[in-house]
Length: 316
Image 1: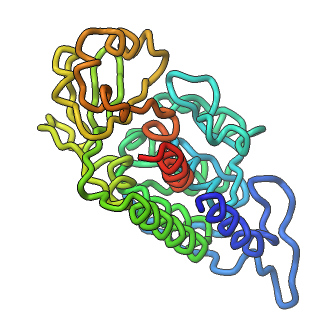
Image 2: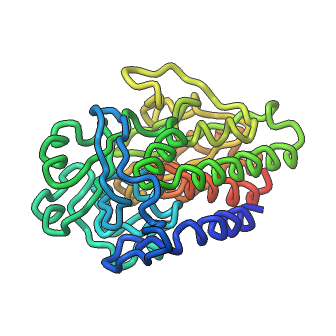
């Protein structure tokens, strides 16, 4: 079903984007009475850093976080520039094919302002969490739109990006398709509310257990699954455990991944250690290794849709 959803989204976008250059240099075709590609522009977009006027439909878009890259590609827009994560020289695996040819303009932590300016973008998309400190510099390069937060608010961020791109209707339709697919998966599971999931990620020697206020948490909620909740610290997105506290992360189902190589994240040592077999999910064969790019690093409609597809394949 998720494959059908993606095809339906692509079909919906084809008509809307037929007159729009997707991040390239070609000019939009002229229709009788003016350029239909310019419909709805100029427009003013309210966002986390204030308001930004976008004079024309963007054709040269730069994105500075994984969520914005996911949003742009989900809406049929291929950016001319994007950043990578700190642990990879390339784009996230599930976006790499469609992002082929997109120029790398630094990392999320350190965007290359000179490289961004050299691309002469007409829109920059990012968020306040990552790049509040450089907003003014980015805004001098091109109209810049920032989301307030990241993660659990991915749907709102998709709609904000769509507003800046002039693709609001397409974004709403795509979200409706995703939510219908998530509900269908919940029905297939029978009693999802009676199943508790532990969303576990190994990061630099610690174990993060993600909450319902995280990106993966929203997907599990949309399916109807219950999620393990542990006390959190400063962040509400995840609880952080030491390897010695592993058993606190047990649940009916464990979804685990590694940020970076398993030897560096600590996953390899924990899975080979004495506490891992003591997890009920492990002994019952319900502990599943999942792709980090899709379930944790990636944020957005494509990642969420792929999560549904992969969770369905796991036959939870």
